[in-house]
Image 1 (cartoon, helix red, strand yellow):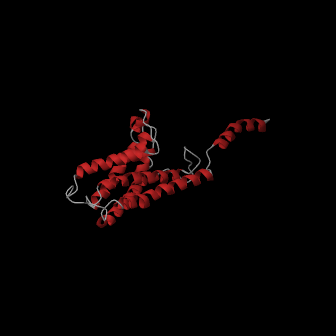
Image 2: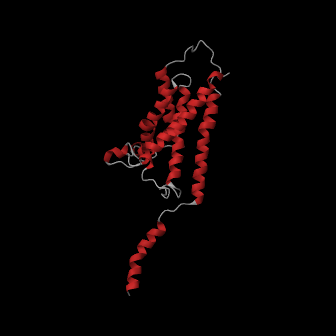
Image 3: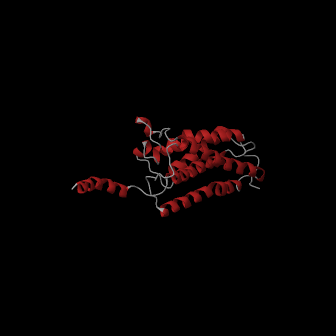
Length: 220
């Protein structure tokens, strides 16, 4: 009788254990492949794309700005960007930022399963990090050869934290802008509009290129 009673008590716990999320190799493999594809878009795709549109004397500057934007943005994303974008803050602040509870991925274990699918949380961190990196790299096309390299690095770090991460939280994190009805199709809001507007603002702040439109600036 005691064994029967104990079994009845443990049944709900066993059911919960069976329903607990587990890592699926197929989902994980697909997410890793997707991460690799986004990764190739920046140091390979975007750098070559911008390099083909600039003057030959600025090729190295173009590559350096795109590559370093990717590296700096990814480091900043790990340090604090992910926490701001996908963390959970207290009260009304959670509508704008996700808080600072996961700085430097604090509390994120390699055994954690992401709530969106059956793949590790760390894979999701890297996947989202590639989007953060390519978004700010998109803006580099507006200021290639036109600003100091050190200034660009500072801009990348600040912009990812102050602009990109909060926008990601409000849209992909299902918060303020999402609640207002904002929809994002293939990164159209968080990546393309965000990066494009950053590039436009930078271009306006820096002003016209020296010699434009009197001097031909062909990509040769």
